[in-house]
Image 1 (cartoon, rainbow, N blue to C red):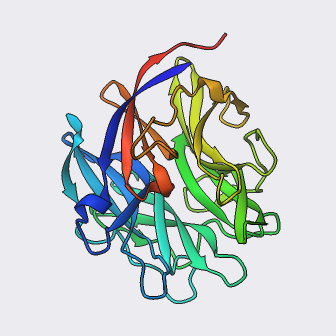
Image 2: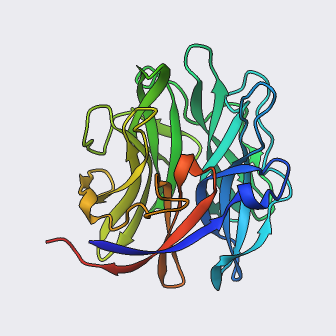
Length: 319
């Protein structure tokens, strides 16, 4: 059983509105140790809706003081990279969710999305590389590293990448189908696994690896971490419904990073009674920092009011 102490809503763009392109949302908060003084949290932000009432999403970052992660010391001046060209998979949105150091370079893995006509959008996974310490990123190519295949006809998204030994491992979300609920189309997606030798070319078949607790459950961003001789992971899950589709956080453990045993009662964190995370918790990302285990996450309305952080205060192994 895990126990977490919530440290609060760290960054709320709807209050600070620091940049024209950072007015709402700070989704997929991804912590990354920048240097001895700064913990950088990469996020996906949005300006206010345009005249067509459609959103776009830009990748940026919020820098936190490493000795006080509740203190903001910087916000990116410009997006990390431009949106894709007309017709590209990332034309309307780039949402980063994993960063990996590789020598002097930093690899960024992100979800790119574009609009559709029958359903709202489709997504694919892109890769970009930074050679200036994580300030800006250049795309490896105009196309996705993971896209639609014979076994994954709808979308792939939400990559979390780790280098384990000599292998690159990615946990990502694979679209299973679209449902029509309450007058809107809602996607169904589950966690799947991909592997690579170089972080660019990936093997994946779209087979779900995490048990579901209800029919057509949606699972989002699985964040693995190692503790007490075993792999653990937190993730978000919800029903595919527009009125009942509020994310909660679940828990799973694994002996080999491939087979996962789910027990959400062990997660040890729930909604607050009031405030920014009282209706939803989503997009969790766990990092070990200076002897602490921290979890960054978003709250209500899919992160419209930004992100917060919780610290692991106790862990009791399950029998």
